[in-house]
Image (cartoon, rainbow, N blue to C red; front, side, top):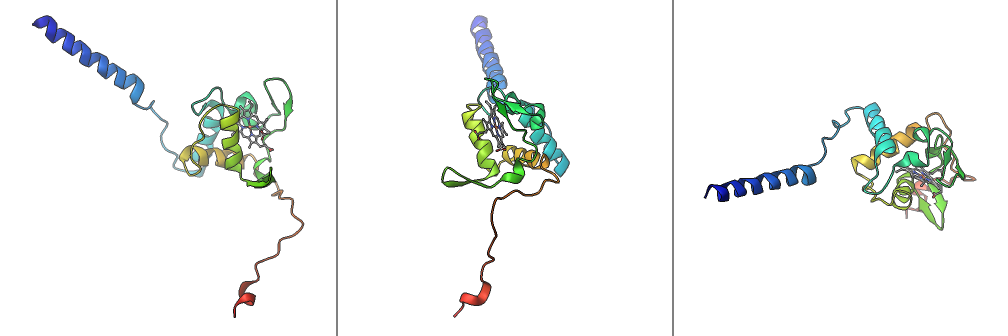
Length: 155
Ligand code: HEC
């Protein structure tokens, strides 16, 4: 009787432990309250987040992306300073935005699952990378932009 009781509470205890270790989220940093905190959250994710895969962005984009990058094989990659100012781009027959490039690296380089474009984690990464382009001229390679013709087409 008492053994039965004991084993039941042991079971409950194991279940509680399993819940605590597998199902509750790790204690997260407080949600950002300013642009600066959002950029810092992006910097943290850049350096530490595996997005369900392996490693983090700094495995290839060193010093938080500021330094010259390199693939694990040693092939050089450009610094990410100024990279955000080069988006969107036309590549492979389609328009590629900064968050699509980030998602591409998360999928391909980390083997992870990219957060959705409007999630806090993705928008914070975009904010961080955009901060690394502060003061850089927007680099879209376009000859000129024709403004829409306004009311000209109205009947
Ligand atoms: C295994 C190495 C590797 C990792 C890890 C990696 N990347 Fe990349 N990244 C690349 C390579 C290679 C390129 C350039 C070619 C391409 O787009 O695949 C690139 C390009 C980029 C670019 C565009 C730079 C430019 O000037 O065109 C951005 C932005 C970027 N990565 C962000 C990230 C972010 C954010 C992470 C982490 C979520 C990350 N990368 C993780 C290898 C990596």
